[in-house]
Image (cartoon, rainbow, N blue to C red; front, side, top):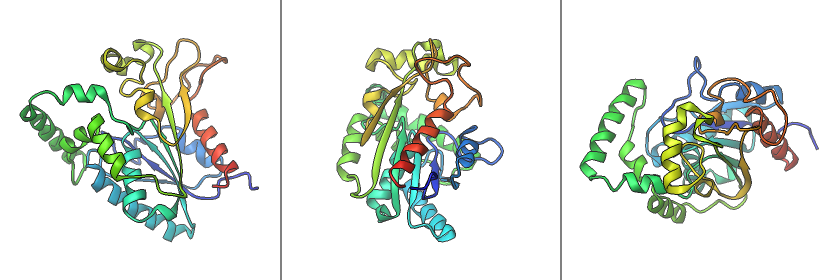
Length: 270
């Protein structure tokens, strides 16, 4: 068996951000994967488009990558909503036989009870918030933002409907990772969100609970060394540095999780 990944890697970002050459969504992660011999590509889908629109974009991107590289298949590593976009592309758009694996990190496969609560607000208010959010993301470069649809896809009802209509494609290896903050001050950027989600659902990464993100081969719940948790932002290396220089139970550097992913996929022959 070769000691490097067989197929290229497509990194698919989550909601609210875009792939950018100057400010990389993934921090030090791409460099780490390249050092491991991986051939890296990016999704470049809209920040806030609906699942269908982004899924179509990802399907096209996969076709482009395979045509360029001559590879038979691709490995997808997706964060947050990017996992839903990828699942749609795989199951609905006829590219399942071109995907070897889908690894998702904190993707809301099963929806969020916290989002359920917010969606009880008057629909007119939700539409107003969605409208101004769409305006902002058009300014940032989105072609087809649809925040209202995205909000609904994050509800538990929306997730149930999506899962029923989007079964896993036979032959694709699905695996998922969950992360949690050990306390609200693990990441000051996610402190208020963590407190709020904790009221409704328990431990979380500032947005999502482990139960919300389990899908396929669930690899477990990860947190940081000592008192340090891992937030939704930490999962993509927002701060571009280690969590801790200490060793012990827990993750000291998020890039180690991605190293683990690549090693495991290589062992599986992907």
